[in-house]
Length: 174
Image (tube, rainbow, N blue to C red):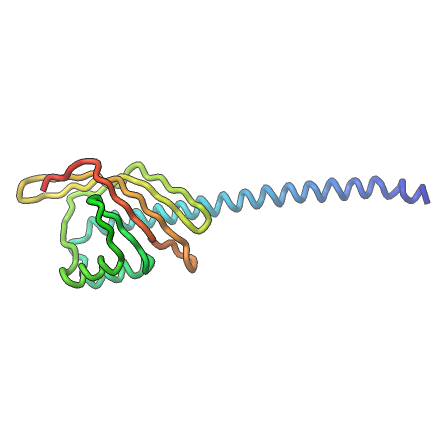
């Protein structure tokens, strides 16, 4: 009996070591998978932000219906926007303005996004960035720099905007 126990001891020790090693490998794989998912989510948010920049450059050709469709597709129904003037707008406010006034026709000569930071917290993402806008007006060239923050939530596998806030960094010439 003692001989049987002694013979089993090295086998049990080996199995325990292998099990512990497998647990460490599984843990490393989980950490690597989480890091890869976070990196993917950050890239998805950056892509959405870049789409906004491209959209801002092509507003002249946008129709009210295409702008409304973009908001309905990419923003949650209880979305809030805090303008650089401190005013708060709901998605309903924004859609009503587009329906009443038509598509935004402001044409920018350039729009650049800089200093982009994205943080992922599970199914929530927070992005901060600086938008630099340039345009021509009757008074000449104008530009504006605005610090923006955007919060996204992941629903049904898609990132949707839930909140944005803007703060002027420079005063635009009108």
